[in-house]
Image (tube, rainbow, N blue to C red; front, side, top):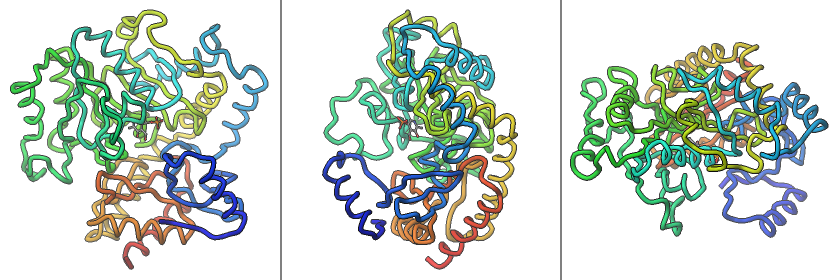
Length: 427
Ligand SMILES: Cc1ncc(COP(=O)(O)O)c(C=O)c1O
């Protein structure tokens, strides 16, 4: 376990233990009170380079001045209105989101988090496909902590202990992981045999006519930063065909991979596949709470007024922050920067660490897979001592994930990468 020293710190951590739920795990036992760009500052004034972006949230770095200003201006104008009236902030934002969504997706429901976005998308699937009680989700994926999204998640069984009965009708199939093929094929010569896992299930025990939705992360996040196949075969394209054939709603959970993280607005654009629903959260408001699920108006309209709701969802302050965040990503051409810089960084990691790790990802959603969990813990601990914060991922915690802010300066990024490379070489 990573720890830090200091008297004030000890007092704060003791109170933390006394008054805060122990169910919420904290990775680093330091207390941060200020954030600026890619840096965090502790109560003792120690500066850390945050390569976690608060788990893929602060796309523009901590407290981006323009986002702060937009939120502050909104704070003095109108903080809360809920569904009591309409307000311009979420109308404008929904229009902006329609502009960046892939294909013909154009209609959005706002909530407060990724898990709520996922739950909402499942409710939508019940309206689109009434009388179809089943859902397919992928083993190794993570969709959140509400009871609904927990039922869809399978990145760690710890997340599910004691919570049964969860949402019924969830059927898991192995994620098409080319780094650990579920059907033991070599990705350079396979014929996408992993797709048989799904089609066999259709034949043996799960009639496709009973399925309302299939939910998948185009790039698995918590489960280990694993992109779905996109080399000789495009798994998502095949999934799209299956969903079209059987009128199954295809949901892409882009809570972690969306909003520019991979060098496109949404990761599914790398695959040229448009889902029926996209879930959004994390990076959209650069740290203010916001979630959303987006679909086509024709589908969303199947949910009658008041069939779903949220007191705080789409609140004016989060909307103002999100509007500014999206504007800046566009204005500063960050998508191109992220894709180019991320590709260079992955090449750099690969050439320096060829035998030590497997490197994968898109843009600045990069995973380094090690041979064992202990190495990952050691590297993260040594990086922490060098004042860099990194997180692990993966069902076996064998992956270090690299999720810096999208606008991180190249020299800061590559200096950090070189320090990490040296640490890994010595470990
Ligand atoms: C792909 C994915 N979906 C959903 C969630 C849940 O989001 P939240 O923690 O905002 O509820 C996460 C969180 O890590 C995620 O990575």
